[in-house]
Amino acid sequence: MKSKFVSLLLLSFLFICCHGQTSNAIHTIDSKSFTEKLKNNENPQLLDVRTPEEYSSEQIGDAKNVNWNGDDFVAKASTYDKSKPIFVYCKLGGRSAQAADKLAELGFKEIYNLDGGIMKWKAEGNANSEPNTKIIGMCDQEYGELVKSSDRVMIDFNAKWCAPCKKMNPYILKFQTEMIEKIKIVQLDADENKTIVEQMKLDGLPTIIIYEKGKEVWRNVGYISEEDLKKHL
Image 1 (cartoon, rainbow, N blue to C red):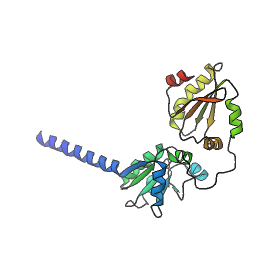
Image 2: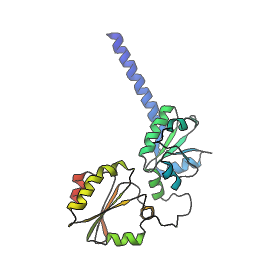
Image 3: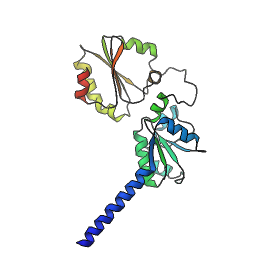
Image 4: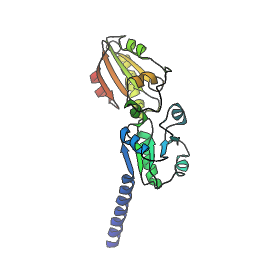
């Protein structure tokens, strides 16, 4: 009995130690700190863990694409030097956080995860080059007309890959029909409307904004329950 108790204590100790080592290897930092650390590392190991399609449209510096959702993430990640710092980012920070956990499991000792992802990084004024003059989706003039198209308008900025957006979509569609006499509800895909998203410096998804007579009166970034959203409608 005593030997079993000692064994359990030893296993618990090993679990805590391993968990602590994994946690200590990961540093989730803001965009300013992330950028500074990149500059202070010569030839930094920078991984963009989004899909190839997302990566091809924009990326940070000389980042290499190692898709977190790809079948070969572990194989590709394992080719990097585990003794040197490694930097990861995605669109909002969710996938890169998961990737950071996996990198720690693989033995990387110093992992930096970009808090808020490239979306927040860009919203806070970071950019690789001059702004793209090509309009993607809705422009500011069209958006201005949209928010004035009814006394009360709700805009839902979302994305197909965004888990909270998918969870909220059924009741937003329900409200769109049930509350048609009270408020106009419009859904905009952030990837298909990059121009207005960047102009508004949106830094998270989903973002819901309510306008009254063209003026913003309420905003929510991130998941909100059906009950709480209905209170604002």
